[in-house]
Image (cartoon, one colour):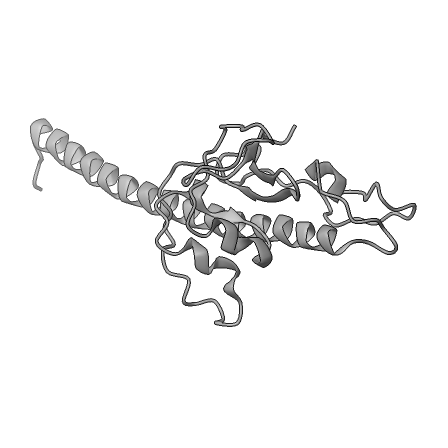
Length: 189
């Protein structure tokens, strides 16, 4: 019968621990990437829901008077209407930061969209997998940060297509936007 020396057993256990550590590290990186991809998909979904709710608000409820959207909470129950008109089921948080969105506003039109506050680089750079007749996400191509993904109705995309959002930098409503900023109100409370 072959007897192993204690030193050899010790080295074999060390090698096993190192191999397991490498494999766990690889699995952890893979899991992190999967989670980031899922949060990115959720960002696209939530941002589109808010954008669509803003579009519905702008189109007006049944018999409601047109007025600028001043607070995203008004999308939960339209204060212009006596009936219970809801444009959103709930106010979604930014899934990347789990914090409030940067609210994009215009002095005359009110709130026109939202953007993430995340400064991370997006995984998704190419949106050719979306239908050609659905240009909602086309302006996100080749953006270097999630905060540059601005969710606004199609009618306002031409206003901000070449602009960068300055997250967290409120401007007074009387101030015109500079060439690299969109008027931004404070985060949702």
